[in-house]
Image 1 (tube, rainbow, N blue to C red):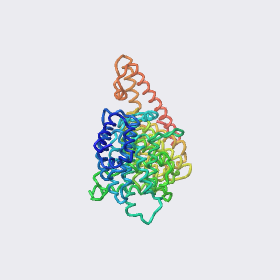
Image 2 (cartoon, one colour; image 1 turned 30 degrees about the vertical axis):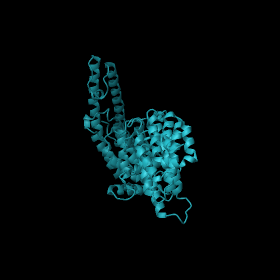
Image 3 (cartoon, one colour; image 1 turned 180 degrees about the vertical axis):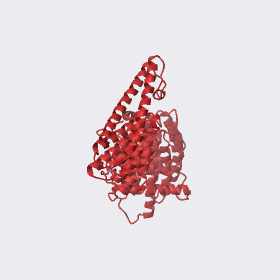
Image 4 (cartoon, rainbow, N blue to C red; image 1 turned 135 degrees about the vertical axis):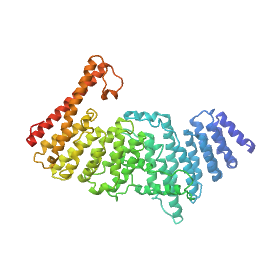
Length: 574
């Protein structure tokens, strides 16, 4: 075949779908000089064919195009091939067809001298930017429980899974070349090797960010992991081959962020955004949240160091606001707690601000964060096991600092229940941490109504019931006043019980009046109905009766506390 006919024939065979003919011609050694000479034109023709709306996609077509580009990458001038391939990346948009370029990219990079780490970085960043721009399935939508299984059928997720699978294979030979356990030779340039490893670390870290961190990587025990989860494990393994200590990675991230901010002329600074600490959150999520075995987590670090370090990355995930990222943060905290023994974190651990930060994040999530019942429940369920890991003295200081900041009645109720259990523990084991002066500092914050007699009792029912239960517990359990709580009994009676009794009478009278209006065919007007959808009269009546039943329950508990107080002090119940 003459040189004049070589390119026109390849383009014509592409249009006609005669893919085997193209492979035969390119494989023919007689045409190797033509492939080498016209490589850039072949790249352009193949990529135009891939992006054409007229092209009928088939495995045979995909194989032929990838083979053609791969042969050009192996035969033509490597720098020219790199430029041509990089120009084509933008033309592929968000399509999974982009993965066809990865093997040619890999082949041409493997032909380059080891010292050209700047070119390696340029190509890896080009690929990384394309991957990070892939569209997410229903961004912001909260997938709960079994609903997350359906994500695997989403075309966007399938596209991301395919590209990530190809990406892991793309990185494999470079990881092997630069692995820490590779056999060293006298010809190795250690400075160059370290530089290339840093390039690899940087770009592998970026693969752990969007879109991977926004995908569902969790799988239940006994189930098979999906393709994306298996690929994520491969990428973590790749990173562990070039980084012997994942706890050194924050320094790597800060290094590249510093270079990016300073606009250095370094080979690593080409204006592309550097990796962020969220990438480490994804890695630690897989290791601690999903129990992925990893050799790059040395055993030399103390439990407390590991806990504090990883917890900071979990906090970033929880605060992200993206549902599946938040889920990873919660599972990371849950998994991390399993690594730490009860009461093993010292009293001084609260010097680290992460403990207060993580509770504020969990409170935000439970009250106003991602609209997911599953996540809200899990965020509250983590409180008790988290506190169990702290020294009892640290538990007290953390709970005592949280109590005045909590406005949500349900969460106040949870904290008061935990405080009650800690008081019981201290009484049983003769520990001082929640007794005497410490207890006296907490009780005035617990035994009070937010708006005195005007408090909405239904809204604050959880915290009020928890406060009453704490009072009943102390009056019955601590008859000898070992805790020193009796000093606060005037506050219990005057600041809490008396206004609560008046508030109950006011609320009951109001709701009984509204119930009588409903019986006369007039709609009720009260707080509990204002926040609910429009209701029929029968539905309103049901709500009113339910509210009155709640008042009856509250009144019975209040009466029981009054009896216990009378028994403890010897004064007649009010």
